[in-house]
Length: 168
Image 1 (cartoon, rainbow, N blue to C red):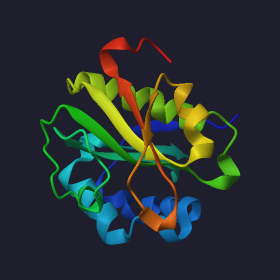
Image 2 (cartoon, one colour):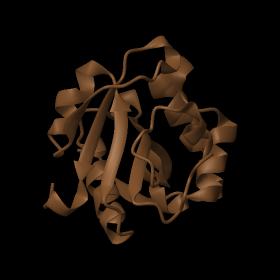
Image 3 (cartoon, one colour):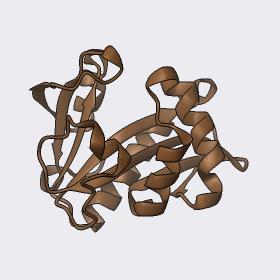
């Protein structure tokens, strides 16, 4: 078992976040510029998992009143509304060598707590088909096939109603 601290990101974490994002998402991951922008504009929605001073996982997001999250512009924080009713997860990532230790579960549990504390109504995300059951384990519902063509992949919409979620 890995000893992990989950905390809100800060500007000094950008390089570790970039390393984690690129290790997990390769070509379809966020650029350093996008990660820094997310940190600066919405640190409340950006959590990291840290072990022995190293960033080993992250979850980052934006907030919006929109229900349709298929547009690429939100990933660049265009349309981000800090007080919007919905959290939109961009990425949940754990370095490959730390996967299988429950770190993503800790990140998601804290992210859901933070989303509730921020008085959000829903958490929205898109994922590849093989991850649908994974997110359903957290209480997410399947919303249908997404029109997003990000990275040339087929994506699926998922949503979590925060007022219906108990502890994970």
